[in-house]
Amino acid sequence: MNSLKIYNTLAREKQLFTPLQPGQVRLYVCGMTIYDYCHVGHARMLMAFDVVYRWLMTSGYTVTYVRNITDIEDKIIRRAVENKETIGELTSRFTRYMNEDTSALGILPPTHEPRATEFVPQMLGLIDLLEKKGLAYQSTDGDVNYAVRNFPGYGKLSGKSLDDLRAGERVEVNAGKRDPLDFVLWKASKGNEPEAAKWASKWGSGRPGWHIECSAMACAMLGERFDIHGGGADLQFPHHENEIAQSEGAFGHPFVNYWIHNGFLQVDNEKMSKSLGNFFTIRDVLKIYDAEVLRFFIVRSHYRSPLNYSDVHLDDARQALTRLYTALKAVPPDDAPLDWDQPHAQRFADAMNDDFNTPLAVAVLFDLAAEINRGKLAAMARQLVRLGAIIGLLGRDPQTFLQGGPGGVGEAAGENLAAIAEAQIAARAAAKLGRNFVEADRIRAELLARGIVLEDKPGGATEWRKA
Image (cartoon, rainbow, N blue to C red; front, side, top):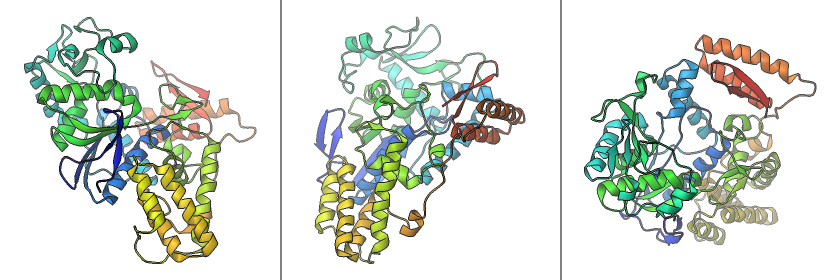
């Protein structure tokens, strides 16, 4: 249990993991902002911390895993207004879709999944404490901002000085701020926003900023100091840097002991993201590939490394996973428990204890498959199944897997994409007019599977382009 080493972003090195409370681990991961389908880049983040969660439990720890849901944010408000639905209707629907996707991929549910809108009183209390400590101020536009230069440790997670950050980072230009790096804690209400996006406060009607949400939820669920905080590498600055400033500024002591950040999923060496338009939703990929193939594709790379997405890589993952299941089909496992003293299991544990090194752990699985093919040993098959289960693999009947997953989809020969797109855009508009947003989302997803991307424009128009 005490041999696990974690790469701590804050320390910039691997460190021996020592929990604050023996045998107990408190883990917080920044979850989804819920306004659209999850894409494969999100799956990479969710999978990384699913593996962390699984290995901590396998190591004997009792883990309290909190993964939040951001259900109030500018993009959410805009999408709800565009759809002519309430914020609650939008976020509830996409939370359900997210849970369907994570379930398909074998991602375990966290211990707690708090929604930001449930913790606004705690956010207001934290902002009030920061104001009393001279770390927050209300600007002329009504927003309440964090005074970055009043917190001496700002920049320690990103490793940059304030001057470096100001010179090198894009920051929001706002005349009401004392410093361009200051960030918003409480956003004053704008007149055209829905009532569901407004809360009363001593600073006037408004809503919380994104950064304060995670500080408040983490503190409420795990305490003022806890063991591990995780998220994507893109959150290191400014989101996690700002969380540190808020929490440590408010409470006067360290916030988190170990910071873990997963690498990007890339397409043509660019980060997969909605803003770049180079994303593939989980559910669209699962129309083409078996869910376990997608899981294997992600798990066999190290969580901190960049991972390039392509059909070629997924096809290779399918072939590799097929080799493991073929070995298990030939030699069914016996019913004995996992033998941790066996050499392959020891190597697997050593790999996972070395900063969750799944590539080495997966290599052990293939060594076991080779042993099975050579010696037809049921004991080796049992080790393969039991070790695979730890990282969420090889849990199905081999014959079921080998019979094949979903068939491929895509643009068929001779399809008139323009005619298809225009007809479906009209059908989607009619569905939205009738407030049948489930059908509207289904049409969008079906078109994307055909290689057609819809883009909703201001004023209600919808345009399409080839993916």
